[in-house]
Amino acid sequence: MDIGLLVIGDEILSGKRKDGHFDHVVGMLAARGLELSWCRIVGDVPARIVQTLKETYASGDLVFSCGGIGATPDDHTRRCAAEAAGVPLARHPQAVAEIEAQFGADAYPRRIVMADLPEGCGIIPNPVNRVPGFFLKGHHFLPGFPQMAWPMMEWVLDNRYPGLRDLAPETETLFTVFDVTESLLIDLMEDFVARYPDVRFSSLPHLGEHGERRIEFGVKGSRPRVNEAAAFLQQGVAARGYRWENKAR
Image (cartoon, rainbow, N blue to C red; front, side, top):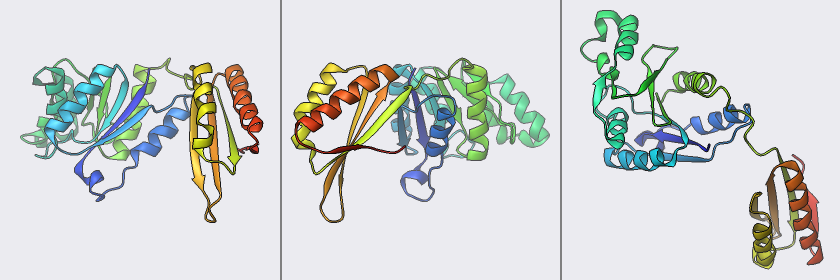
């Protein structure tokens, strides 16, 4: 199962606010032996949110979506999540109970609209102010505020996916090749990818301040395959006359 992150809000794209969710999600998943597969930032444009959600619903991925589930006119995520799923918004009785328990009579008439959620969804408890998030089609819709969203993410993983652990590649080898450009090693990289399709591979070129060129290669996967694949790549580099060194982790 791939894991994705959606961050919704014009304020992120405009630079008014800096996203903090990405780094947190990467670290939270790593602590469970998991990896983030993709991340998208989407502005407050309903049609774009709907289209994005249609695509990510179809992926079957586990997705965290942060932002846009409040009660102000610029909060579109609840409605867009329903539209993308082809279901109406409906007042969720559990969400109503949570909001009423927190705010009493002050839940009406404004705050209670945050209980209008896509029909058929479940709720995610909010430990800060009890206004819940919700889950639908493998997507978990959370507030944009980190102090609310982050413990809610932990709840999702602990309660909805308790067995989802240690699925990331077991090991990674990094090494640097000096005085070379990627174009000179394309044939070796293509041969590598053909031989080891089950191993994840990365090539990151670097240009030093004095013009020196180097490439950082990364090989990730199960330990036996990584050892074999990295050795193949290193031998190919050496056979072409280039120096390489393992990179400290």
